[in-house]
Length: 435
Figure 1 (cartoon, one colour):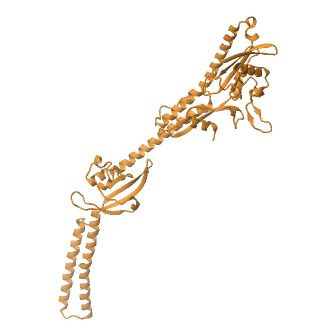
Figure 2 (cartoon, one colour; figure 1 turned 120 degrees about the horizontal axis):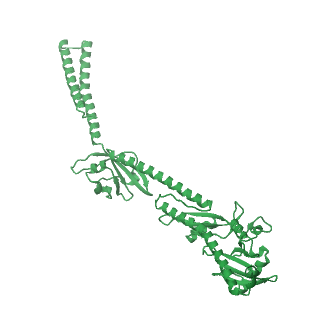
């Protein structure tokens, strides 16, 4: 809501505010501000620097314009920016605590009032808002002749007017009738005042423009060299130091990101599972070496291709972080079983899906073989143990019609069969057909 902020955003360039009373210091001043933009022309922020005008009044009060002449600066709203009367450079509104700059008419300086009246008669208007070049006039005050000059501030950014009056006796003396020298002296004073104002303006605008260029360089990721700005204003120097700290922080962050990217890339490059990054358009943005081996294609062949050209994955709405099994048929006609895991991630404000594929065909075959081994063990060795138990129970109960030697021989034969079957199971396990 600050006027200087609104002004910079609206004008899109460096500009000055009208003079006002600073809230913190209760001193008069102006704010110079300028916008900074990102590469896409969106507003990054506004740099604003407060300029205390009290020092300008102090400077003007020390100027010597002849013996009795004075200089003063005011804006087109007739607010006094600087004058020789330091005790009148700020006034309080009647009936309130509001502080403001005084108007020209409130200085209670009869000579200034007459100078303003003279210039009003010469320009046929008391409105100096249209003043574009220096205007000279003369007037009489208490029997003395004066020459006055009013000139606009030499910078278009400021709507200030420099006023000056001087007694003819101060600078003409015996040659006061020579109007030519009158004008020459006045022009010289005008030039000196203009040069002083120009130097004052450049002391502010030059470092501000440097700060603006520095902000643009940061937006373009140009982090070197550091910003070295010499200025008489503490605020500008502190802003430059802040830019240098920002550059160092961004450089450190970039190095950290590069280290992380290198680490993640190394991990994905060495991973045995296929890792595929798919964008919102179902196109492959990245695939690791295991992924290219998985589909028997090169990195160039996979980049930018639709993932459906290689494998049918569920739509985004059905993708869960839990593993799902898929089947594909490769170029050799083999249909391996694939375990797929999906996770969502946002990169550069665009949604992507990270798909991890793992061939679990061997694991499925191992599970089936385990199941078969258990079944065979149950049917073979388990059945033999049941027969041994039945024969042994018959001997214990005496319910036998065969000789005991025959029964024990049968039990021994069943045990031999069980041993042979167990050894065959062990041979299968030793060949690592089951994992």
